[in-house]
Image 1 (cartoon, rainbow, N blue to C red):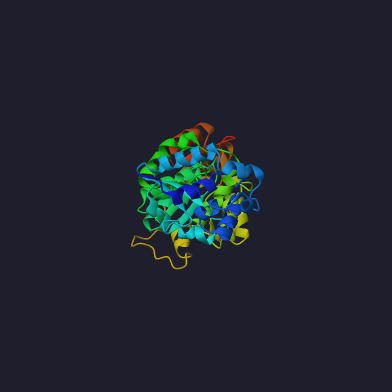
Image 2 (cartoon, rainbow, N blue to C red; image 1 turned 90 degrees about the horizontal axis):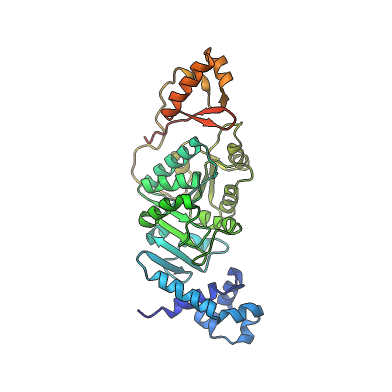
Length: 365
């Protein structure tokens, strides 16, 4: 099959070193489609491009990168989407700097599906991961594809929940779409490629570079109707995504947590700044203007059973063994034995510093 010259033109411009997104849009605005840009002489292009970019535009390096991308796109479920394509996600056309070219692997139709972003800490608590997965599955069943960034912790849990629900998940990568990062999520990435969608604006083979991850966050929020922060420290990259969402006019949601947990500080700061406090998936769905959830049972959690024994005195904040002994009137040996049983049952998790915290079991309702 002959390569599409129009697509090759988009790739040539987007893969030229030093030719950034702003310059590319200025060229398109001035001259029209890529073929018309590339038909211009050097003097006209020199008004937009520096000498190095002008040289690189017709270089063997760029030609090889274009050929590689076109060859990659020939495989099943591999897609190259440009700003001129009908399949380009409408939601990204609303943001200030949409990518000229998107690389996608998987179910392309998900780019047109109503979506919600769910992000949070890489070093998440067990309760945070449970919350993320439960919210994601419930919201996916309600008709929202779950968008996240394939990071460890909350992102990975959100993707798992999205895959378990009816509307699947979209992973927006900070690497090339053919590069898995982090390696621990390789199996999850492969499952998303089969049943969801991997998306990147970065060229094939782009490795994990620190400054690319904050940049991709605008696409996580841009693809979605709203953004839910599950856990985040004050310095978390998830707050960048939340700011992008707010700047793009998307709803921002946050789950509150313990006042003693550093992973709650970012969520509490967002709530103080106007983010919507949520305790259930219904809190999210009720705020999304114009979105009609799919028919489903209530997403509110079922009432928890009344706890007895050690759980009854643990509370919901991290606590040490000595405090539990004092509250329960038990010896350290008795408390330690009960904590072990509760850990094995998934009701308690051990934290650094000799602390323990109860886990709330998710109810899908």
